Image 1 (tube, rainbow, N blue to C red):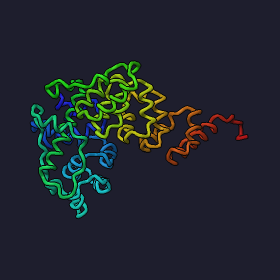
Image 2: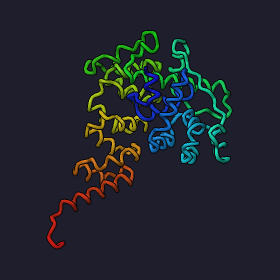
Image 3: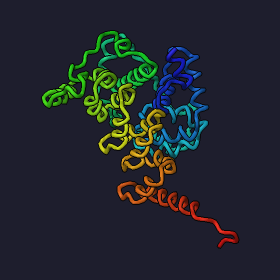
Image 4: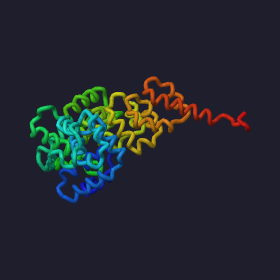
Length: 336
């Protein structure tokens, strides 16, 4: 059921995750119908959204490779976008620069679906993150990283659909008691112990702690370099309005965290979160610019004077302030 929802693009996950899931299903789903459905869904996906994701520096190289191999025939405009992405694998970049790439010109490397009952599934999820292949990496290493990426994305999709981590791993996942203690009962020693224990936890343990832990634990894990962990934090049902505002204003979280906040309808219904995001200089311009017009007059004036935000955001705020001021001026007959 979950794989069918993934192939239809209707899992409750961010657009980036949906694209990753669709790519992996189109390349390696166990059933031909699922592969065809995923490819069909990708073909119907909003083109602007596809372009944005393919231009993102955090988009996995496997997704970029698939776009070059399977989407370029119908989306020629992706060529320049892919070539400008630093994460595009070198061999794909060379082929795209050499001229037109018909649908089957590029050699397609199948992605092996990991068996979730095997111990190496846990090992794959315990990696700090999946990185871009370095030049000269042996094929086995490339395949291993692709498998790790797929395992992580599948876990995210199933968590988003309501599954528990124990159901996915087939074994209990233990987390330190400090991660679940009420925040007001944590002593300074507990906090120091928590930091030390979190640093030694596997990715799966961190994800469970992110979903079930206390505010102190989430504050540590939202900055984790493994994007699956930070995404799990944002899926926690325990996040408060104050926490969400703090994450949106944070200068030490990844750009992806800020994007995920902007794409979360629950968070964006909170005015304080939206305001914090717009005023965060680390937030991507493409997600903050449309939010400027939603600010009230007081916050617009503050934003128009904020020298920390990008010029384009500050200039937009100044224009909106002027438009509102002009609109509020009394109108006289005959233009007087």
